[in-house]
Length: 84
Length: 84
Length: 151
Length: 151
Image (cartoon, rainbow over all chains, first blue to last red; front, side):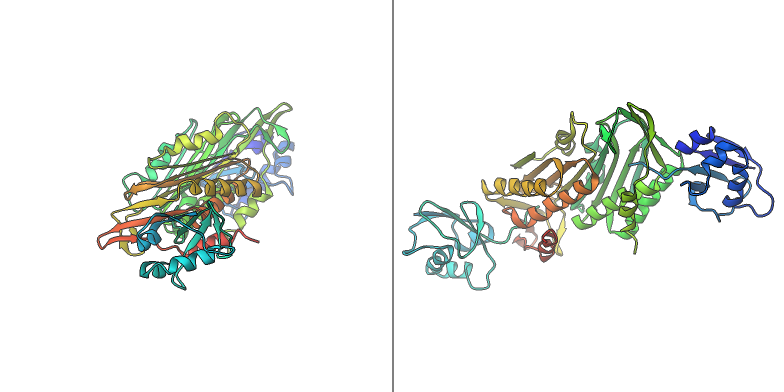
């Protein structure tokens, strides 16, 4: 299992701020996790549509599609940051 | 007559912070005023020696050797500034 | 080396900057930046905003940015304070302060920290406008500002 | 538009910066700089220093520098406070604060004012060292910093 977190507009699009999911089979990465999320329905395919700008952090460090995901990891999805 | 002011290390070299002098004849400028000051003695020729770095302001605005000096003007001499 | 805080409440700029210099005799330069909520942005009237963040990651991201600044310039101390939650126009959002021996380094590091904070620290602004809530879009100009510190 | 003061006493950084933003809702960025006396300079131990200035011209020079900054950038308000007289290591010497809508302008104008103040405002420092009094030499690096704002 991994913990998923969603922030800001992406949180509003998927309608969820936190979730626990089983990892996809094989050697899961952020990419395979996102593929699995897209299949959850319209809100999810919209949030992660091609060309949609989103960021991902694994265990609170910025990551990318190729980053491996392991059991127990915290994977957070969010739009580009706008603080300051 | 013009009022002369001297600041910082230049003030210490000439041993004077303020003076009143008659203007040189002709169409006096900062240059002719400085020539007259140099003839006052060793301290003065040292303060205004060629290659010595000094600045001048006429009526509290930065000026140069060519700046005209008129009766009643305030002419200030000082080294390069070091505030801040 | 670096004081980082994320908090809902306001901060006292004078007191926070004082921490960087108090009792020291080697600080010659203290550069600082305060960001505030404006009543207009991108042509929208702003009645207020809510700052969302990613607790835990926010603090470590800010600490990492300060550590990068300390590695890059000869700094004595730094402070970053960022507010979260609801804010209204005129409110302070963020404080960055940098103490160094010389002003060039203090100014550069302060700008660097702000540029990186704007593009790398997980905060998101949702503005309240007369037309409703509006998530602020990331700015390309902020990306460009952060890019100039590379290379 | 610009608040300029030359004074012997210390200033309260928080209070002075507050003047630039209090009651306003259009300030998005407040950049500031504080210069302090260090206990060492150019390899000399500094026990204290005395700041001499040219009363009257100092204020008008600082006002002129602020006016140049307001002409060059879109600024909301500026403050410059410079101390004179005897100071010891750790003492504040100068405060420059710039309020603007955006941070790029606030940072640039704040650096500009400091660079011009260092090279154009009639202040002179005499340091007290174990070897006696020593007038501080103007720095070529300060001239270079001021030059970059031309052209």
